[in-house]
Amino acid sequence: MSPQRELGGATNRTIHRQPASLTPQLALGARQYPPGATNRFIARSTLPSHTLSLMDIPPEAVPDFTILGTAGKGAFGTVLVVRDQTGVNLALKILHHGRHTDRERAALTSVRTRPDKHPGLIDIFHVGTAATGHLYYTMPLADSATGALPGDLAYAPLTLTRYLRDNGPMPPAALRHLAMHLLDAIGWMHAGNIIHRDIKPSNILYLNKIPRLADIGLSCSGVVDVRSAGTPMYLPPDGAVGPDADLYALGKVLYECATGADAYAFPSIPRSFLNGPWKTLGPAFNQFLLKACAATSSQRFDTVDVFRGALLQVLDPPAKKRNTPVFSMVLTCGVLGLAGVAQLPFQTEKPFSVPGSLSPAEQVQAVYAELKRLNPDFPMVGLWKQEEGKVVRLDIPADTITDISPVAALKDLKHLGCGATGGRGSLKSLEGLRPLMLESLECKHQQISDLSPLAHMPMARLEAGWNAIADLRPLEGVPLRELMVNSNPVTDLSPVAGKAITKLGVGHTQITDWTPLQAMPLKTLAVAATCFSRLDQLKAADLEWLMADGCPITDWSPLNAMPLAELMVSGSYLPSRDWVLAHPTLKTVNGQPRDTYGK
Image (cartoon, rainbow, N blue to C red; front, side):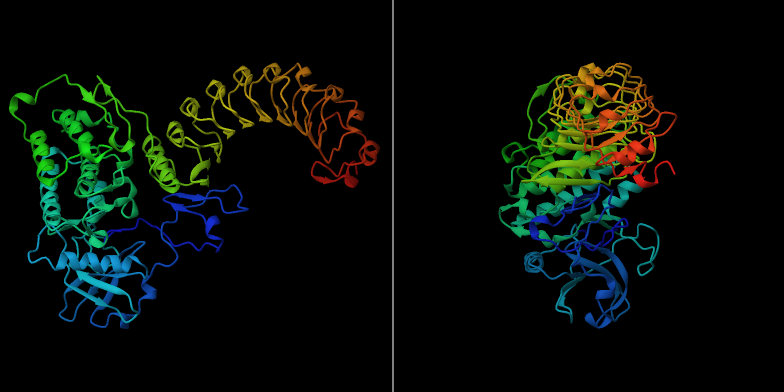
C-alpha cells in the first residue's frame, strides 16, 4: 500500500467464515466461487475485513493530533490526514495489528538510524504507539492531485499512478528526470544494505513537485526471498534476489511511464509507442527494459550505477545512433520466463502469458488487466475457481469483449463462461482459445460462426446458443455429452451423430434430418420451433425434459415408457389432457402442475 494512495472506490465486503481451505481468495476484480455459490458476477473487493476504518480510530487514539480525514487505506495500514499541535498538517500512517507490524518497525529503524538522510525518500518525523496499541508514524503530506487542501474530502495525494493517469505516458526527458531521482534514492538505500522491496507507481509520491520513494514498510537488510512480500507484477520471477529486485521493479515502473501500458503487459509494446516522442529512442529503450526485467538475476543489472549508466546510454546517445532505421531485437521476455532471438519489427507484440510463479488470484488479475487493455469496456469482474493451486474455471461478462485471447494464459483452465449477459455480444472468434484444452464452454449470445478452434479439445459441454454457427463439422472428434446450439443457422446434425449426448438444444434451427438422434441417450431435448415430428426416432433416449413448442408432433406415445418429468409445448400440435394425466412420471406442463393442463 502506498502511504498516501487513492483507493479508487475499493470497498470492504463481509465474507461468511468458512474453513481456511474454502475461503474465497480475492484478486482485483475477481472472486472465487464460494461453496454453493450461483453463477453471478461479483464486484471487486480488495481489502481484508481486519483493516481499520476512520470510525475504528477514536480521536483519543493519537491525542497529540487532530484527525482531519483519510488519505488512503490498504492491507497493512490506514493513512490519516492530521494536524499537530503547532497547526501543521501531516500524514499519519497507523498500522493494522499483525506480524507486519514488527517488520514495519524494523524497516523504520533501519532507515531512521542511518546517520545521513536522503531527499529522495519521504521523511519520517515521529514513530509512536497509539492508545489502541497500534504502531503509527508521521510524515509530510504529498502534493494534492486534485488541488484540494489536506483535510478536504476531495484531497488525494499525487502519486506516480495518478500522474500517469492524468497526464499519460512520459516523454524521454520527463522519464530521465524521474529515473535519476529514484535511482539516487535507491542507491542510498542499497549503500546501507537496505532493499525497498515494493517499488511501484503508487509508492512514488510527489512532494513539492519532486518524486520521492515512500512506503518503506517492506524494506529489509540483505538478500531476501521477495516472493514473501511486495506486489506480484513488480517482483522478479526467480525468487530470492537482492538489490537487483529493486532495479527489476524500477524497470517495470519505467516501462509503464514510457508506454502507458500496465506492468502486466510487459514486454509487449503498444503500436502507438513509436509514433510519438519515443520514435527515435524506442528500440534502444526496449532493449534496455528487456535486460532490466530479465527472468534471472544473472541477466539483470546488478547495481544502481550499472543500471544508471545503461539508461543514460539510451537517453543520451551519440547523435549518429539516433537515426538507425533498422535493428535486431532480442526477445528475452524477462518476466514471462521465455527466451528466443527474432528479427522482428519493434512494435510486434508477443503472445500474452502470465508468470507461473504468480498465485492463482494474481494470474486472474493479470488476465483481467490484459482483457481490459484489449477490450477497454471490460468491467474487470467475474468468478473463478482453483484446484490444487491452478485456475480451472473462469466466468466473465463478455458483452463488450472482441478479443478473448488473454484467457489462454490460464493454461490449466477447464471451464470457461464468456457469454453476453445483456443481449448480443461482440465476440466473433474463438481463435484465441485454441491453446486451451477446455472441458466446457459457455459462449451464448455472441457472433461466433467458426467452431474449429475447439476441434482438438476434450470438451464434454458446449453451450453456444444465439450465435451464427451453421457448421458442426469441427465437433466431429469432440467427446460431447451436452450440446446447446439453439437459435443458430444449423442445418445438419450428422457431425455429432453417434455421440453419447444426454443434453441437446437445437431449437430454432434449420435441421430437417433427425436420424442422428436415434443413437443419442438423451435425457434433455429442446427442439422448439423446428420441423421435428417423430418421437419414435428417439430410440436410445430416456427423456426427463422435453421442449417441443411448435413442433408438428401427433403421436406422443413413444414418451410413455420414458421417465418424463417436465414438458414444454405450445401451438397447434398438443398432447391430449388424458394422455398428460395418464403419464406415470410427468409432473409439469409448461411450468404448471399437470392437473391444470387443458383447463
